[in-house]
Amino acid sequence: MSPTQEQQGSKTIVGYVPVQDVHKEKSVETVEVPSFIGQDKAGAKAGAKKAGITLDFSYAHSYRTGKEQVVSQKPEAGMHAIKGTPVTATLDDKDMASAIQTAEQKIGEANAALREVQSMGIDTSDLAQPMQTAQAKHDTAKTITDLTGPTDSSAYWSNTVINGCNAKK
Image (cartoon, rainbow, N blue to C red; front, side, top):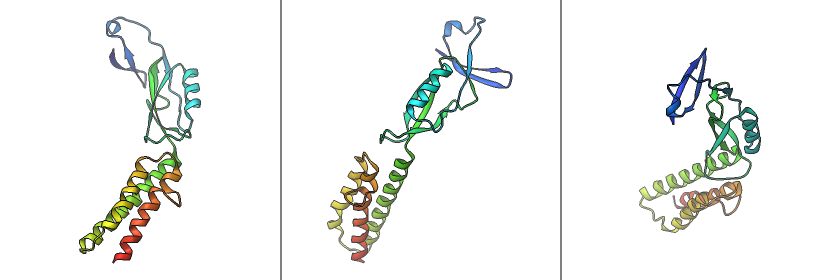
């Protein structure tokens, strides 16, 4: 397949045409790409089918909750594409993304607290296991509670490290 990008009036058409057809004069059927932003995966698939295009999904994060919605797409809504050209839609769960960000921030704060206390020459070996647990909870999280819950979460263990460091100062 050979990538093409043709101008049709003021609209750009994106898609692929087989190499053997590039030099033949041929009518190319195009469709306007609808917006999938804010739709869940099933809704986006249905809209794509109705529009005569296909969707390729990617995920903003490796965490899957089943509540993901389309947060970006290429080509963007309003563009024209050759019928059958895939649109790439990125899925994300905004609540999970927020929990991931919070947990990562807490892990960063815990690491900074450890460095600060260690720079004072204070032993922090007793905080190694809680720090490892915070990171492991983050890396294996499947739910928001795994990341930011009140007990046995990445944020909980990060706070344990932060509080331990503060107690050592």
